[in-house]
Amino acid sequence: MQLHLGLRRAKHVNAMMLDCLPMRYCLLLMLLLPLSLGCSSAGEESASPTTETQEANQRDEVLATLAALDQDAMRQAFADLADFTYTTRTRTEQRDEQGQVLAASATTARHIGADSVSVQNSNTTGRFAFGWLERFSGDPTSVIDLKPFPTHILPEDPPYLSPRNRAAYAYAFLPDTMLAGQSVRVIEVQAHPDSDQEQIIQRGRFYIHPDNETLLALELQRLEQGLLFREESRFSITLHPAPDGTGWLPASTQADVHLYAPFRPPEQFSTTRLFSDFAPLQ
Image 1 (cartoon, rainbow, N blue to C red):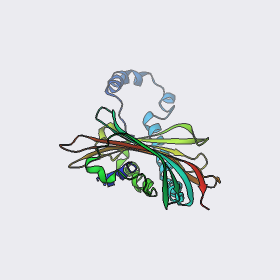
Image 2: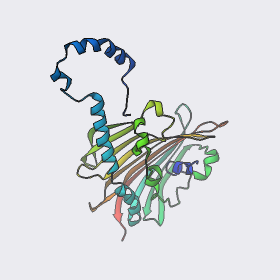
Image 3: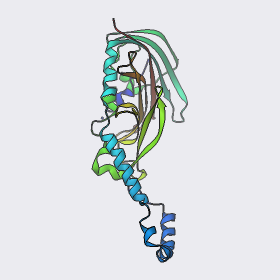
Image 4: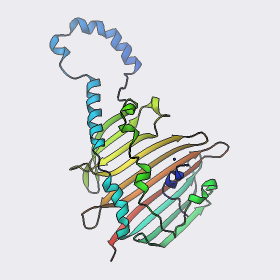
């Protein structure tokens, strides 16, 4: 038994840098300002950009990179699974409110393109209680269409790129890191705490090819508040080079979904899927 990735966001369950200085620093500046005005020189006044200007410049650079981000490789990677045989190792867990594992399943399967799957090993501990989500729990012997997965979690018009939302997010370049044996650039967007309840995407981290704008991995944290439910979810996708080195294929996916509804205990599920042993279809 396995939960479809992120319950496909439970089938839509079911659908800043204008940052202020902390108050203590503002008070300190108010006390020091008269002294600084009395002893500063003309040269010192224009010595370096202000913090606000530096932050604005970084925001603009991050936004330009995000706007130019090439997401086609990630979408194509999942579409190209139809041309390969490959192995998946999938683990699904259900947890209680304290984070303790109530049930877990692990399945290893061999896929032949998009047409068939053969379960090589499967075991379950505990008893899953999917409740009203039972129809999304899946069957380990069924073929799962993973092609739409990137589109479901990465919107075409993300809120952090909208001009009206820019003050609600912090934008930053993070240190480069290693991915698939090469250094990649890293960008992060983080919803301002004052806007937590307003932004569907709370945090995003993007791993970008060093020589172009190809998106090679992402991590997204989402929050959706409806009239009768609240969904907190985390998703990640990582790619690695195809066997012939001419493209990209999925390396891993992860989905962690917490659903809260009135008069029901929280529903907390996670699914991790690892891809390996790729071979072109003959």
